Length: 98
Image (cartoon, rainbow, N blue to C red; front, side):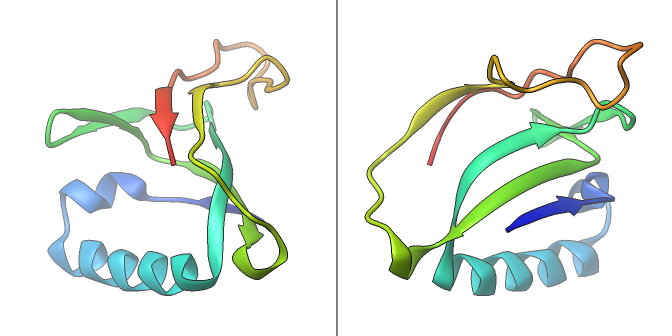
């Protein structure tokens, strides 16, 4: 399942949004795990508690019960990723583990 989340800048600006997002992500992570991330470069990056975060991010999920997962460490974007806006550089998320 691939989902594009918008308005992620609000995680650092709106406590109500942050609490709703936390409930949604917690519920989703009970049955699914993230297998890929990509920042949409049509939107901007924001600093939230000292960490750069994209305002729009694509997350690919897999259902946990179908696979056995092991710790994963990857630099994003990966070589197969491409910018959404081809006239702009892709947004760098850095190396992440999940």
